[in-house]
Image (cartoon, rainbow, N blue to C red; front, side, top):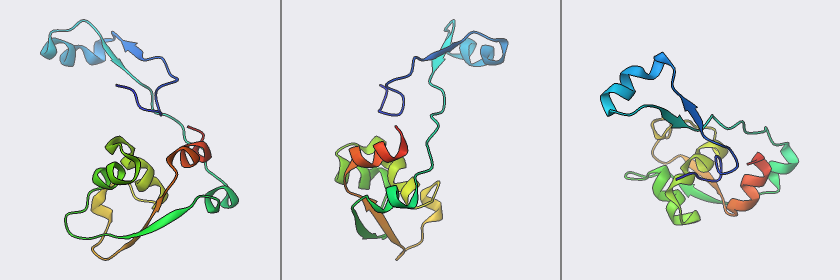
Length: 113
């Protein structure tokens, strides 16, 4: 199922030899996927216009769990990661202050998604 990052894009179908081992393993003729979306770099003014809440990273926290709590959808974990400048949870330390944008629609608009 496509999320907002891919909803407006048509899937790419690839029948090239590069993917033949994966197609053979899965007994399929082609692989369909979405291209990587290009996020815009928001201005300081755009970024500061977003309302946020503080969250202290603690043992057991997961970005997906926070996304589910704040946005009702775990698949938006990447929004929280992007806002805090991290690629994975491994970059977060216990006790680290994180900021979570509260309005998902506004945040996605700032990103151009």
